[in-house]
Amino acid sequence: MDLNQLNAGLISVSPQKMIFYAPYDRSQKRIITILNPTAKRLLFKIRSNAALNYVVLPNCGCIEPYNINEVSVSLNYFDFHDDRGYDHHFTVLYIRSPCNDNTMPAESILCTFKQVRDQLKINQVRIPIELQPNPICIPQAELDMLLPPDTRNMMLTKLPVFGEDHLKHLSAPMKRKKRCNWLRVLTNLAVIVSSLVGAFTQRHFIEELIYLHLTVDEVQF
Image (tube, rainbow, N blue to C red; front, side, top):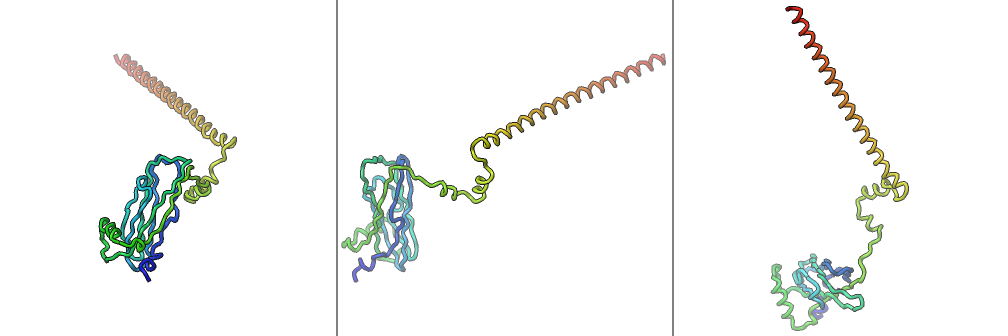
């Protein structure tokens, strides 16, 4: 049994197809997940036929037994034309690690792939890329499921439906607010009037006291 047969089906790669959506005037990020379900350490590297449009981090690495690695893929600004056909894809190349060193630098991993003279011994999984001309459309039901249950119930039970009832619902707080404003004005006026009456009464009382003292003094003389 040759090495190619031994390596066949060693890894599981997700997603099987990578999709990007318009508009393409901003960066879009996706994740490639590579699973190593074997008891052997594997080396991998990522290759693309449109490398100028994508940023892949890391572009190579080592996957420990029964472990996964995540690779970040970013599509930068892309001059997309709907009338053109695009055949972009990624290829995940992988081989069994020739050593037990789990700290191999990226340069050593790339050199290991170059040293494989028989390219048939390098297994590969292709991930096609689909470039959609339209923005992503998510059904409202799925968007609602992203909300917490309490928030969802509140929106369904307490918020009125837009229409005449909704306008009445909006106008009711405004009427209450106007009523409260009038009550505040009347309360302030009552306080001012009571203060003036109190001041006038106190002044009248003081004047009477002064008049009585003056009258007593005149009688004593």
